[in-house]
Structures are given as C-alpha cells and as structure tokens.
Image 1 (cartoon, rainbow, N blue to C red):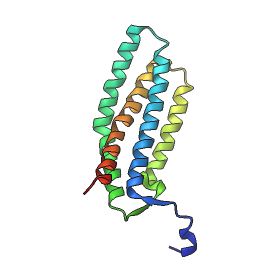
Image 2: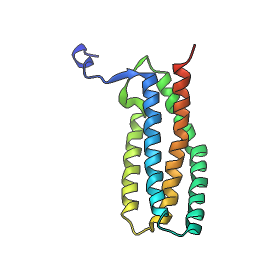
Image 3: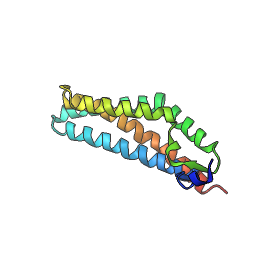
Image 4: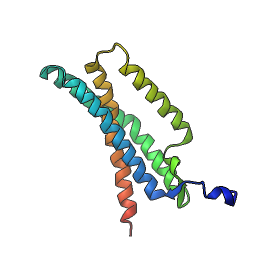
Length: 148
C-alpha cells in the first residue's frame, strides 16, 4: 500500500474488531427487541405471551440455524488476518449489501399495514438471535484478552 495512504487506513487490532462486532450485534439486537416490546405492550397479556413466546422460539431457531454459522465464519476470518485489520472488516464486504437490504426491509415492514404486534414476532426473532449470537463474539474477545 502507498505509504501516504497508510495514514487513512483505519486499522485496529483484531481483538478490538471482535469486541466491536459483539458490541454492534448486541446493540442492534437490543434495539430490535426494544421496538418489539413496545409494540407488544399495547396488547393484552395473553396476546403478548403468545406473540412473545413465538418471537423467542423464532430467535432461537434463527440463532442456531443461521447466525451461529455466520458469526463463526466472521470470527475465523478476522482471526486469520494479520494483527491489524481495517475497522470495517468485521463483516465481509458482500455482507454490507445484505445489511442494507435488511435495514430497508425493516423500514418497509414498520411502515406497512402489518399489525405491529405481529411484526414484533419478527423483530424479537431477529433481535433476540443477534443478541444471543453476539455472546459468541464477546466470549472470543475475552478468550483472546486472557490468553496465556
């Protein structure tokens, strides 16, 4: 790389990148669940219980069958890099397009005529899965920090 361009390279230690990934996944997961909880608070206790339980089951399925594989491949990719990694490398570049599509879908769904309590199931599903999956990043970060 051109030495003059090196000063613009936002490189960080890969331990920090794993920590940042976990923090971002946690924040997004909590934000999605928080929206869903607000929507469910406007329903009866019985409806909240059914829809909330459905969202939790969905989150466990998304976490186990979808996000764990993604998180593991992200961690493996980050750890295989040299000691300093671009701060934007916590996701592969192609994943940024997927993230953009998911954000647009979320905006579209929030502004659709779909009743918010039913939308809460989807938001709990993805938000809960992101929060659960973030713990894998946090665990790996602490393993790296306290590695002998």
